[in-house]
Length: 251
Image (cartoon, rainbow, N blue to C red; front, side):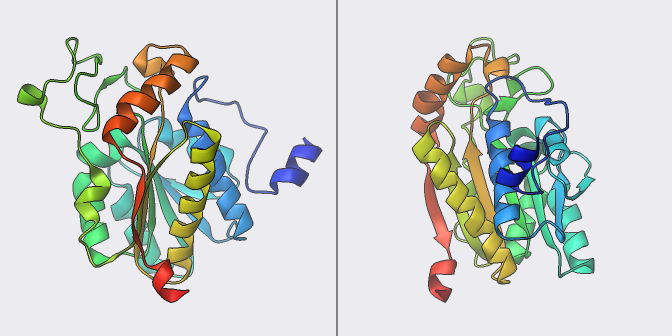
């Protein structure tokens, strides 16, 4: 324990029962967020606003203050908190079901206003906690608990490209889509998460990072097959890229 604490610092906690399933991408993303907070020395003024779902466990593993918001309302709660405590660094941590379904309006209006918060969306292409139902980001043909024959665009529409909805908004300072399917991708994700927090620190506006991850339990696959599916099917539609980076204009 002491060796881990010395290596990772004070933000990441190791004394809690781990709630994520084996192979879940949330564990990687949570660690990257914690490492960013530690590296930027934000622990004393960081506040997490978590959504409903598997992402709601994330703050259990970080020694920071946190608020659990109603389903989908994390961006609205984060904006309210940031307005009252502008010196704190406020971020939301949500899954694709929480953020892109019931919470899409809160997200888009926060982005359009240029609210000085950071939002992390962990996209595993389904509702993981409640049984693997189709979410707005389930890919075409994907079999879920509610699409036994696969997602059909004629019945269910197309998978929602969330960052693309915000790339024309002037208030958005940093906007990216990343993934954790391999080590190279994880390193890129770490850089994007750090840049998203740096945008808030510098007061540049709203920042957002979508992270494409596998959900072996929801996909009903072993870990290896889930990562292979994510690499081929999810990333075949959700292309990792940086859409907006106003940090480049200030450097």
